[in-house]
Amino acid sequence: MSLVDMQGKVAMMTGGARGIGRGIITTLTGAGASVAIAVMCPGHTQTPLVEEMQQQEFGSRVLGRMEQYVPLRRLGKSEDVAPIVVFLASDAAGFITGQLISVSGGLTMVG
Image (cartoon, rainbow, N blue to C red; front, side, top):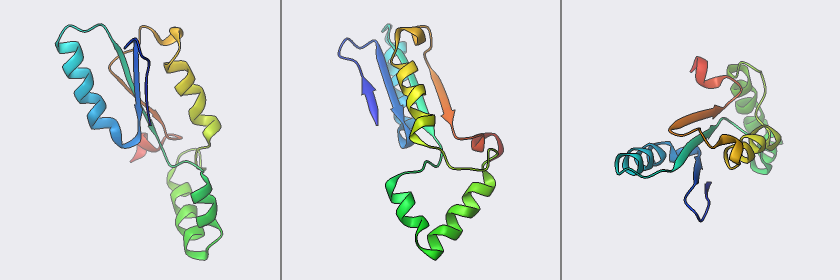
């Protein structure tokens, strides 16, 4: 997911876009652009697809093991991720740029 306001004040990307986000940060700020860019990196998150996997024996085992590795011992929820997206898109985050923000329940600390 990417979020870019039309005035170029905020650009925010999630997940696999980490490398692209770094490239954008380097390119735009190196060219003297005044733009705030933050990359939000969500951890394993409860989605309808994950819920469907939990109904199957193998999927349930895999997801149970994943939860064991997350320091908070659970998968993320959209309610965990959404407030960070809203904050980064707000004026309150106007002085945050060039950051990779992990919303992973602590998984990036240990793995």
